[in-house]
Length: 372
Image 1 (tube, rainbow, N blue to C red):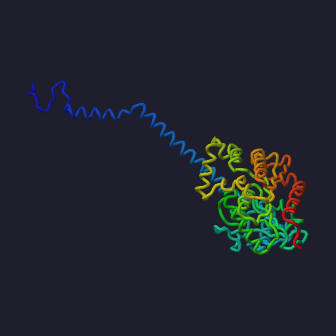
Image 2 (image 1 turned 90 degrees about the vertical axis):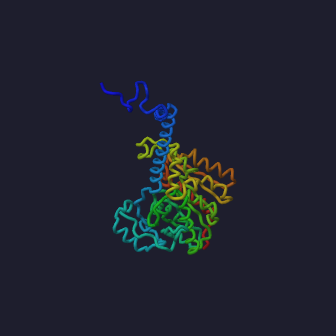
Image 3 (image 1 turned 60 degrees about the vertical axis):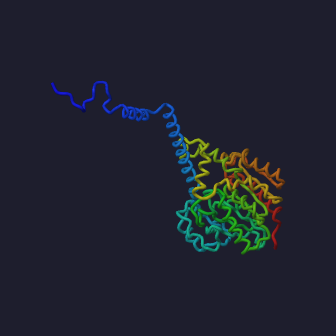
């Protein structure tokens, strides 16, 4: 039989001593999380995941708008037999462009980029065309500036120019990130208003027209409305297929956007995430150019609203009708015209005769006749 040893603890005694045993028991107790702790952890994880999810959708959605696909149209006024002046690029490059692109609705490129003669306040180089009226009006006659929408360029505005070319000198130009102009982001009017301002600076300095009217389509209309708030050189304004607030068409279109619909993204709260993403990418949001906010600042300058009854993007009841009522309340002289069955941005194609009958008399009343 072995003798007792001093380091062998008696039966019933704790091997680490009573004080240390209590301390280790407390530590072990802390490692067993309570149900409340697990709930808090689950909620925190869910919140973090939701924030990341919303942020991802905002980044994807804003990227689709900011870096929108560009129009491949490189048609020129020469294709319609019109005389014109190239603004801020060599007109000879149009001859090369036509030779290289027999199908000018699907051009491989847009040719030479704009030069430095027309610069925006943030150093974007703007290219365009000056097209004298078919009536042979002098440069000092009333002039209409046409502003294209998202994903289009000045070539796409030739269909609008056809309704006005007989009576008015015209200016068509590429907004930033379109056609021959520089830049790589779109903001649906917020920054594009600077592009319109730059082309107006060029027009007033070189041609000195007696009055200037602006016709904008969709996002180009938003840019025009934004600039008109502070630029009295815009004497009359036609807004075609334009939103009242950009969040409205986003609410309509967001669930239909193929890339986002495939991921099952609902419109809210992700529209605000898209706005946040655009602000991070560009320093502005489309809300900075919401036309509804510009209405009170038009004063007595005449406004025309044109829309298609089949527009599912800028739904008339939420956009054209809202703008019309806002103009009436603000005392702005306003006309409104609807083209039956026209979809977004296609009013001039669906109702070409009516379009001319609407806009020509409107601008003649607002701007006056040729200065001779």
